[in-house]
Amino acid sequence: MASREQPDTKRSAIKLQAWDALDAHFKKVSKLHLRQLFADDPNRGERMAVEAAGLYLDYSKNRITDETLKLLLRLAEQSGLQARIEAMFRGEKINVTEKRAVLHVALRAPRGASIVVDGENVVPKVHAVLDKMTDFSDRVRSGVWKGHTGKRIRNVINIGIGGSDLGPVMAYEALKAYSDHDMTFRFVSNIDGTDFAEAVRDLDQAETLFTISSKTFTTLETMTNAHTARAWSLAGLGGDEASVAKHFVAVSTNAAAVSKFGIDTANMFEFWDWVGGRYSMDSAIGLSTMIAIGPDNFRAMLDGFHQMDEHFRATPFERNLPVLMALLSVWYNDFFGAETVAVLPYEQYLKRFPAYLQQLTMESNGKHVTLDGTPVVRQTGPIYWGEPGTNGQHSFYQLIHQGTRLIPCDFIAFAKPLNPLGRHHDMLLANVFAQAEALAFGKTLDEVKAEGTPDWLAPHRVFEGNRPSNTILAERLTPETLGKLVALYEHCVFTQGVIWNIDSFDQWGVELGKVLAQRIIPELESEAEPGLTHDSSTNDLIRRYRKLKEFLCKSE
Ligand code: G6Q
Image (tube, rainbow, N blue to C red; front, side):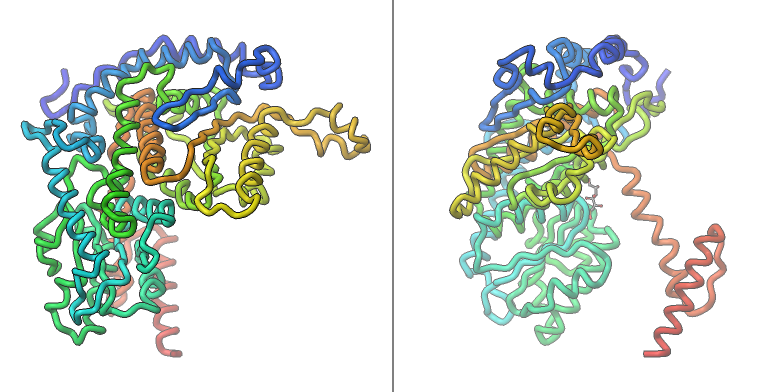
């Protein structure tokens, strides 16, 4: 019997019949070629596509048959996906290891909606913070909010790391076209001093505002950078402590720590423990985004998120974009043994989107035990990676086309460019369509020979094809579209996690990283030679660093 402390995770014990059916099915279809599948069904391209909330997903270039889809959908049903979706939206504590609700969907719920956590409707709180952010952003953007010396704020630097950095950076880059170009936005995350030094090199303290973003307000990197920022700011403002109130605001769940740092809690923007770091770009963590693009655009982004939430919650699985994408990734991950997924946006503004997705996907689903703590029997989260097109075509695409590994790709493209320049956009789109086509259909030996290629060279020029991809096509990259795209992947990750029966919302590996270095810091900084009790490799590296540091210090 489970102890009182233990969450109810019954399903993990049940072996789902759909897995067996898929194993058997895989043996039958794994060798089928996309050339054949398309030849057999001339309408496949139109049939295997879904449009929802303004996003068009063409999944026809996947190595699936109708039967595959049927079985994958059965897997979703047997996994209890619908009930788990409802549990998330109802605010149940589905993050079982941290006993927390998982309610990023509440961050974009419309005013007037009700989502109850521990007996309290959280939606009014969400909107109160949004209103406070709106007021503050308006004041900074209009110049009403002035720095300590009376100058207006021209530079905003967000200090945060992980979930308190990657979302804001990605969103700023993605929505740069909508941002106030008279202002400078920078993001400092790394504890490597270079990150801070380069970010402020050309800035005037009197015009610079720091948003210190940290859910816990205890993270080593962020606190170290925040203290350095405070010292830098004070140095340029005559050392007057009163200036901190004009140049520092905080985004956190920890009011006590914010106050201890010296930031007036009146200048703190709150969020809650039911918002996971990697799911927080649409919370107050998005303050820098709101200052950059303005409150109306920020709210349009939230609306995009919400539209995808509604789609995910209410649409039958066979037409449900996040569910379909998740099932396809499970198909490659657990049956074909594919280890990675490439995300390839053909939109320069989405250059940080793959990096953002790396955290969202890999921190969420990089898990080795199921909800009840027993080892998983299938591979879990694949490695997500990518670069914007067309750059990748001139580097790593070679391996996708002709290497020995199977790498499913997500292509993302938009019909309308944000910077129309001559024929650029048609060429960009021609490339994305051509790549997906070439990956799927390849080039046979006969075709290569028919081009007059000599026999010895022909094998090198053969493209096997049968490389699967999704293509996501939308009208234009807008704040609303970005919201939809991010929510699409959030719910895709959720669905994968339900299928693998893992906790997608904890991150014990990250927590470990937060404590590991603490033990070594004093060993690097102590005057006296420390007694080292690590392994011989770590001990030696520490000794060597100390010696080098001393030597370099003396020789300066
Ligand atoms: C995200 C993770 C992690 C976290 C950072 C920063 O889901 O928990 O990336 O966001 O470690 O944490 P703080 O916001 O508490 O500084």
